[in-house]
Image (cartoon, rainbow, N blue to C red):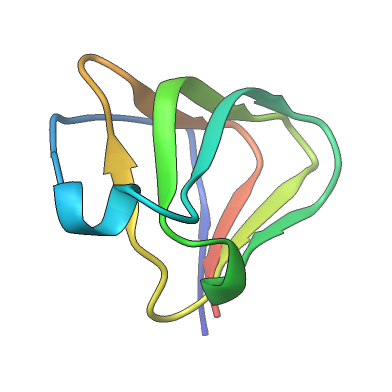
Length: 83
């Protein structure tokens, strides 16, 4: 398991049409409680910037597909964990 403690801004543009049609989860805004993005909820479409608040953790399970729409990004002020 890798854990990252840092402030990071990730931006990108990625369209994965086959993955976004049926059971996609749109995400945006500030994560204010510890959160896990699971394979069952995937793919996750970041439709506007997501911020992980200080002291909070976002866990992204292996195999989860995350797409960024337009200029949306991920800002990590807390912890981002793969696992």
